[in-house]
Length: 272
Image (cartoon, rainbow, N blue to C red; front, side, top):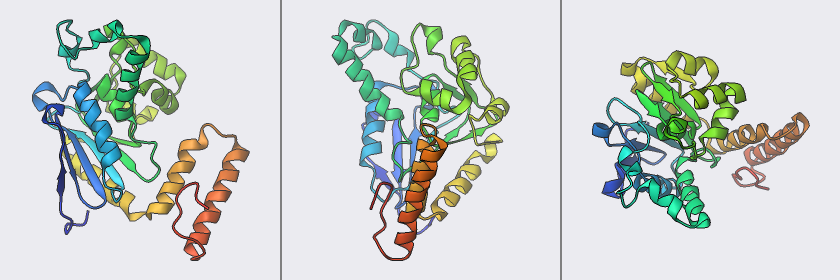
């Protein structure tokens, strides 16, 4: 990171339990409820969505992390109390469209991969349970500490993972492994996470910050437009045939070569 950059704090609702800081080209979003293992709430999800959509356009890399000894232990258990005014048990009393619309809004907080121009890195240590697991799954890259514990706990509570995690998990590790993890609630540690593809790297807890910084530096060393074109190709690859993917590669390469030759502006994915 360029140390001459000024770090700016992005203002968020204090009730969200988030801290957001950014420089010119990177942002760090910290779940900041360490006394509650960074448990999540709808206010946090609303603010995560707002931050994702309102970060300065110069930001290229976002790091998602948790303060203290956990990434996130998932949903705040107070929200399943029947007396909580913002609790989840109010949802079944709502009309179907209103209820599913609420959930749709919350799902947006977990989508950190759809923008080709933004690369997201989850720095995961300790518990990443339920919504914590799904938030990590919503990043492009996961770097984990050796004490990590992933768990999709929702079915054990009588509900389902509804924050985008089911497809992302299947895409990463395949249906059979995903079914076993979700339908048993078994916890996954760092060694297995690395082996099955949940994590791109596993390091000792004390080395997590350095490993994330090294990755961010490497990401920022790649030109923005080449990075965006490559990410767009990778994201779409699973839904295309080999011939379709190669056709997309040809078009992307043509755009990049024309840009490098000065024959067009720095068009992003889908440009002329």
